[in-house]
Length: 208
Image (cartoon, rainbow, N blue to C red; front, side, top):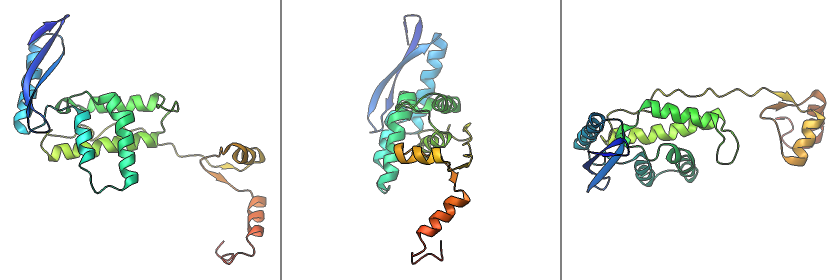
């Protein structure tokens, strides 16, 4: 333990994900007792399984690399969630120290701040990011790196059900010119009649 600029640190030897011993030094504790307790907790976690001292970022990278049977689209989704959201927010946190409070803080931040593309994330996207984290941590539980999954029982945002709107002339023009369209839109009777007239010669007209 050592004192550095008003905060206390601990340093312990633990196993990495490769099974090799590594020195972990972590600071920011208010007093030596707190730093000592955190160091003992990490040493105890290390006795339960190799790799307990790794960061969440290190574990996510190992977890994704081991998912050999994923469909390309699923792998891409996991990789995007990890790169853009999970690692920037929690990647440096020690896996064994991750709490449900940390996970809820992540979800609240994702729901309230713009994404890297500048647009606010939808509740459904936040739910999918949480699902990626929960799945990865379930594997960590099975590997005995952590005793419980802190992502279980998280406070998830409720996706808003889109409100249907009518395809007005203005909305139709914006869709044709800029590709902008409502999440859910319905035709007027005149638009439905025009569509049916246009497919009158179609072989599947009866199905329409």
